[in-house]
Length: 165
Picture 1 (cartoon, rainbow, N blue to C red):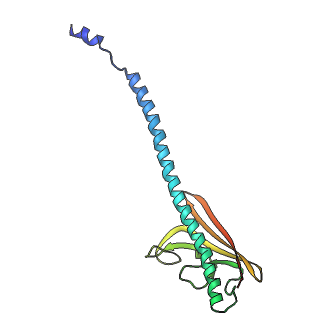
Picture 2 (picture 1 turned 180 degrees about the vertical axis):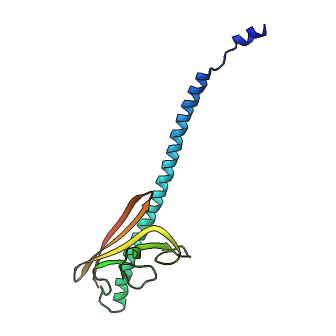
Picture 3 (picture 1 turned 135 degrees about the horizontal axis):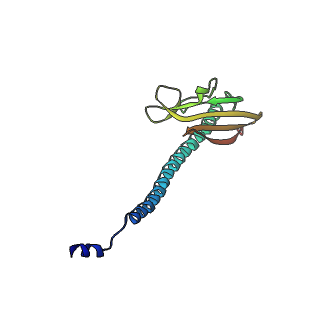
């Protein structure tokens, strides 16, 4: 009698259980891949914002040199000849790049980006390119390059500086 009672009970077969587990695992794989892509996008966006700020800082450093030249009564483009340069926030004038490692950026102990040093190396490289147009103007490019997962990313800014004094 007991056996007859158990036979009439319905339940899930092994095939049904495996089919449900397969469907659930497909959904979880989709969600996990979306999470991974979101984390990668967040990292790229964070570095793109840092690259923009580093490029903007490069242009502002050249502007600082031009304005200092004016205040000192020197020619507005003193130390701002044609070439590729690197410059930090503590430097008075830009320095010509002679080696590829000159453009590498490090974090100092205060969390500021500097060229060279014994602190931690960042994935960023910045160069500032100056192209004189005529005696009263110059084109300035700030190039920031970084590597992330074997991909090269670039951020470039450009401006014109004038001797409007």
